Length: 165
Image 1: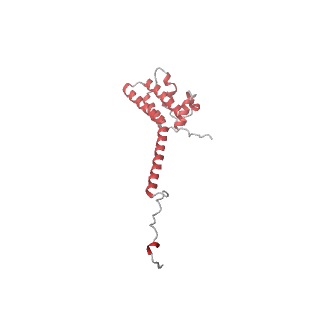
Image 2 (image 1 turned 90 degrees about the horizontal axis):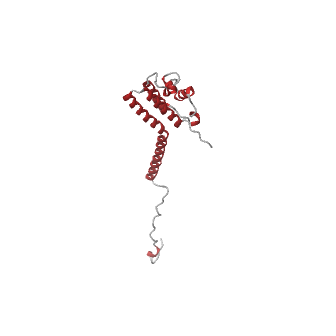
Image 3 (image 1 turned 45 degrees about the horizontal axis):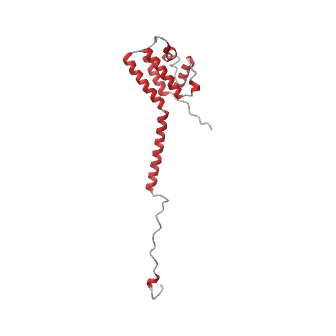
């Protein structure tokens, strides 16, 4: 212990603590950051999903309107014509145009069977989509065609998108 005649001279000034550091952040900020990143990822996934399924939702809405019209008017010819248009537009929106646009006749029905994993278009009531829209009277009831088209729209799997590098 120093022995000095002036002990107050040997005292040091008050030391202030170091300034608060911004890094590393506190646990609460890590949690907020994680929630924000998770929220952005969920939003982006939902946006992409809605965008991917927009054509399906629109086709199903039109199909619902056709069902209501059929329940009211029982017009088989009109229903077959509208279902043919809905299926063709949905296929054009979902698959590459080069694959779908030129298909007619049995090739069109085979495409519908292949993409819908069924044989109901070439061998069943789905054949009405081939010539039914162009005939003055439909030979079969369109009521059997509506569930087939609805099943095809809901279960068709579009091709995977290829990225070109």
